[in-house]
Image (cartoon, rainbow, N blue to C red; front, top):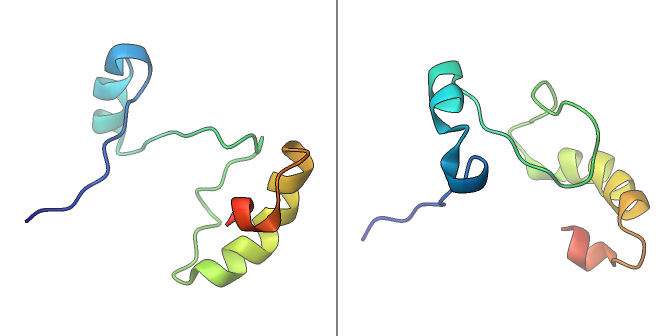
Length: 67
């Protein structure tokens, strides 16, 4: 059985062609910075750096909710 994540690239996939052609995808987690140069092979350093920013942007969320 195949396993995959489905991405909606804008309402009704309006940005799909641009993303496929450019080789990228976008997401919005409430963090206003480009993460493309900050994606290590291990998730732990990423979480250590980004969880505080996520919690700052999402008041009332817990560390568990942040990942």
